[in-house]
Amino acid sequence: MTMDPDRPGSPQPLPTYAGLRVLLAEDEPMATKLAQGALKVMGITDIVAVRDGEQALAVLEREQGQFQLIVSDWNMPNMSGLDFLKAVRRRFPHMKFVMLTGKATREFVVAAKQHGVDAYVVKPFSPNQLRRKIEALFTL
Image (tube, rainbow, N blue to C red; front, side):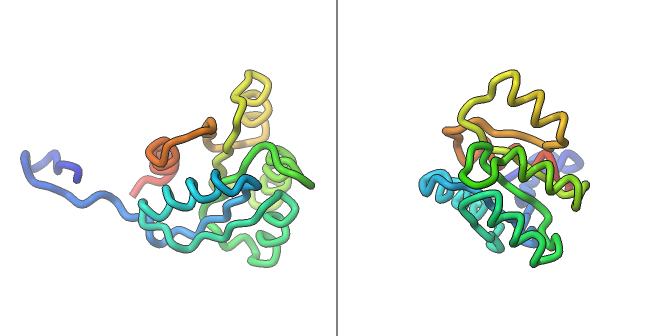
């Protein structure tokens, strides 16, 4: 519960993200489960999960960009998260994009920012870390 600043002591429900449709691109099964669990706790149930950037791009094209958020791993087979991000930015420049990475090196951060990533989360991550990054992208 959050508090209403206009009424001290009055509980307010947490914001809901139930209307969001999320494309999750992650090749590690445990990271996929963790991300899905974090999204579900936020009220997000419309989650399309795929195992690599090529599949994610195919789904995005087939669905004509009908997602509000992409959560993608950096290191995936067939098409890296960075290449996927570049393709998304060419076709859907305003789509919210969160990158997951096992290594938040300076090179990673610079490359991700240069290509328009909205946020990144370092693995292993907690559901709260992912939730906070997503909440920062969407103001309700």
